[in-house]
Amino acid sequence: MVNSGRKRVSPAHRPWLLLVLLLLFFAALAWVYLVPGSVPGGLARQVDASLVASGVSSRVTAVLLNFRAYDTLLECFILLLGVMVVWSLRSAGTTEPRQPAVGAILAALERLLLPLMILVAGYLLWAGSSQAGGAFQAGAILGGAGVLLLLDSSPFLDILPKKALVWGITLAPLFFLAVGVAALTQGRPFLTYRFQEASLVIVALEVAAAFSIGLCLATLFAGRLPEYESEPAQDKFAAKRGE
Image (tube, rainbow, N blue to C red; front, side, top):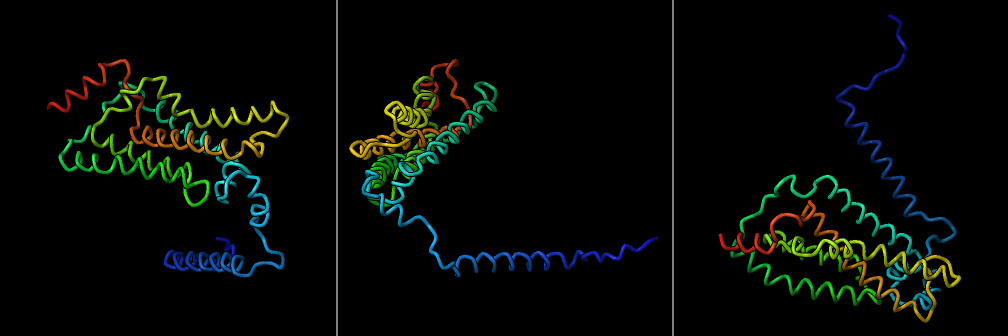
């Protein structure tokens, strides 16, 4: 047999080799982060210089909903695509999801937390223009409220008319597109705002995005297309409560 001259790494030494490679990779990342070049990087100065014209006083909100609104538009479309994929994989009537037993503790928790979660979501949405917060944080809280309702066997997704549910999920992407097309018709680049309208447009985008994000997250947790063609959801809900 011809010896190729290559030495194979022993299986016992492979974890140590992997550890060494990871440490070297971590050291390289730390060096890049801790030893910056002569020219300071980042876009903080450009953001601060344009913050007055953005319509808000929060850097994060200005970047996400003005300077780089494309990113937020695509993120809303990703959530919409996720809902479409889930609905296509588990259509109505294919499997009956298991409904947890409704207990007194869960019902009391729902009554206690739901108003608080809606209040916190509203505050995060309002505070997003000047400090930490915004549409995605508020949408996450609203999605959590929807999950709490679903854990309590509340069929709020089934009670909603199908058109209302679809329009609610697509509200943020469609509103973003409408704002972008309106800018094009006025001779401005896509998703750019006039100074006089910037603040109002950003607030409207945040409200639409928070509502759609919360509804998308709750729908993804439900993991199924609501059953519109079966017995009325209100009757099913009353029957489950009566058991």
